[in-house]
Amino acid sequence: MLFPTEFDVIVVGGGHAGTEAALASARMGQKTLLLTHNIETLGQMSCNPSIGGIGKGHLVKEVDALGGAMAIATDESGIQFRILNSSKGPAVRATRAQADRILYKAAIRSRLENQPNLWLFQQAVDDLMVEGDRVVGAVTQIGLQFRARAVVLTAGTFLDGKIHVGLQNYTAGRAGDPAAVSLSSRLKELKLPQGRLKTGTPPRIDGRSIDYSVLAEQPGDLDPVPVFSYMGNAAMHPKQVPCWVTHTNAQTHDIIRNGLDRSPMYTGVIEGVGPRYCPSIEDKIQRFASKESHQIFLEPEGLTTHEIYPNGISTSLPFDVQLALVRSMKGMENAFILRPGYAIEYDYYDPRGLKSSLETRAIKGLFFAGQINGTTGYEEAAAQGLLAGMNAALQTKGEPAWTPGRSEAYLGVLVDDLTTQGVAEPYRMFTSRAEYRLSLREDNADMRLTEMGRKLGVVGDAQWAAFETKREAVARELERLRSTWVNPRILAAAESERVVGQALEREYNLADLLRRPGVEYATLMTMTGVEGQPLAGPGVADPAVKEQVEIQLKYAGYIDRQAKEVERHDHYENLKLPDNLDYLDIAALSFEVRQKLDKQRPETLGQASRISGVTPAAISLLLVHLKKRG
Ligand code: FAD
Image 1 (cartoon, rainbow, N blue to C red):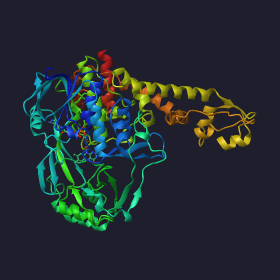
Image 2 (tube, helix red, strand yellow):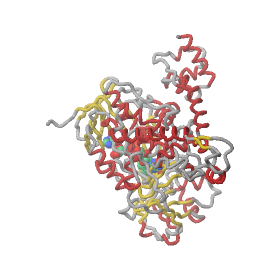
Image 3 (cartoon, protein in one colour):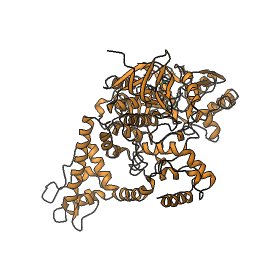
Image 4 (spheres, rainbow, N blue to C red):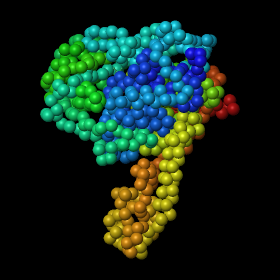
C-alpha cells in the first residue's frame, strides 16, 4: 500500500482542540490525518490537570453529548470528582474532576489509535499549502506534503511561543516543547488579523517535601462519586485521592512585592494580555492589595507521581522569588520545586475573522479551533475542536455547516461571543455568559444535542441506544407521574404530611405533588395508602432519569417561560443576512456601523446585534432596509 498523502481533512495539533477535531471528522467517515509535533503529548494538559468547573463542565458535557472524548477520558482518569454549586439550582451546578495526567493522555491516545478513518503522524507542520483562496494541504518540517480539502489548525500556545521566567525568556510552545516558529511566520504572510496573548502556570512541587500533617485535607464527593460522561460510570474511575489546602500570608505577599522589579509582567517585557479570571499570584497581590491571604489548593498530578500542582500561584517571577514564596506558606517550608512556574506569550488570531462554522473568512477550507482563537482552557478548546472537525467534515462531504445557537448550547454561546465580539483577553466560559442558562444545564446536554449529533454522524450506535433508552424512560416516568392520582380517601393525612408536608384536601397527580417545594422523588416513591398499598413506587432506578424527571417537573414554570422567550427571539435571531448585502450603501446607518457590518459580515441579524457599537436602533434600521429590499 502506498503511504497515504491525500486526505479529506487534516488536523494540525494534538492538544484538546485537535484531538476532538480529528476524532469528530473521522467519526463522520472522513479520511482524516492528525499531524502533531509529538505523539507522546497527544491530549497533554499544559497546566492544571483538572477538567470541568462552572461553565467549563457544561462544555465538557456538550462535547460528550456530541460523541466527543473529553468526558469519558476524564471518567477513566479522574482521581477526584466534585459537583460544584451542589446546593444551588441545576443551571449552575457543575462537575469538576482532578485527573491523573498520565492516565488522561493514555485514554485520549487509545481513542485516537482505535478510531477508524484516522491516521496519526508525528511531524511539525511548517507551512500550509494555499491555492488561490483555498487551503489544499500542509507541509511538514522535513518537507512532506499532505493534501486535503480542509485543514483544521489547533496550534494552541505554540505559534511563536515565548516562555518567560523573571527577566529570562526563550522560544518554546510550552515547557519542554518547541514553538511553531515557521508556521507562525507563514500565517503572518497570509495577513490574517493577529495579536499576542499570554498565560501562566505555577511551579510544581515534589509532594514528598510537603508537610501534610499541618494542612487541611479536601476530599472529593465520595457518596456518590460523580460521573462526567453520559456513557461513563463510577466503576471506571481509578482510586480517588484528596487535595490539600494551604494559604499565602503577609510574608508571601512581601516576597512577591519585593520581586516585582524582576517580573516580566511588571517591567513591560511581556506585551500579551493575560487571563483576568485566572490571574498570576503577582497580579492577585496587586489587584486585591487589601486581601491578607489567598487559598492555595495542593492538587496531586496523578497516582504514580509525587508531583503536586499548587493551584493559585501561577507566576512568572524569577526562580529565587518562586522558591521563597512557595516556602513561605504553611506546610511548604522545605518544599522542593520540580518545575519552575512560567508565563508564555503566543500568537492568536482575531476570531472575528471566522465564520460561525470556525472556518476562516479569508481562506476557504481553513478552520481554526482552540487557544489560537483567543480562548483559554482545555474545555473551550475541546468544544471548538469538535465543532471545527465536524464542520470540516461536513464541508468535504458537500453538506452545510452546523453551529448550535445561543439558546441551544454553551458551545453556541462560545462561538457567537468569539465571532461577533472578538477577545481583548483570553476568553473563558462562565455560566453568566449564557442568557438562557436555565435551559442550558449540564444535566440536559444530551437532550439538547445528541439527536443532532446522531444526524450529523458523530454519535455512535452504543451512545445513541443509551440516549434513546434514557429519553424514553424519562418520558414514560413523566407520563406515569402525571396520570397517577392520589386523594384523601386512599392517602392518610399523617402519611401525606410525611411525604408532601401537609394533608391533601383534594385529588392530585404525582407530578403536581413532586412540583411542591421540599418534595423529593425518592420520598414520594415510598408513599403508601391507607391499606399499606404502594401509591407511587417503586419508580425508576436510574439516577440520571430520576434527576431529569425531578428537574423537568420542579422547574417547569421557569423552563417554559424561557422556551417562550427563545421562540419570540428566534425569528429575528436566526434571520439570515444576504451574503451580497452592501452595508456601505445603507445610508440610514451611521458610517461607523456600516463599516463594522461590512468588516464582520454577520451571518444573521442576531449576530449583527451583538457586534459592539451596533445599537438596537441600527438593527431596526437594518430590518427596515431588508424589508424594503425584499
Ligand atoms: P494545546 O493544548 O496547546 O495543543 C496544541 C497542540 O498543537 C500541541 O499538541 C502541539 O504540539 C501542536 N502543535 C502546535 N503547532 C504545531 C505545528 N506547527 N505542527 C504540529 N503540531 C503543532 N488554561 C486554563 O484554563 N487555565 C490556566 O490556568 C491555564 N494555564 C496555562 C498555562 C500554560 C503555561 C499553558 C501553556 C497553557 C495554559 N492554559 C490554561 C491553557 C490550556 O492549556 C489551553 O487552553 C489548552 O491546552 C488549549 O488547547 P489547544 O488544543 O488549543 O492547544
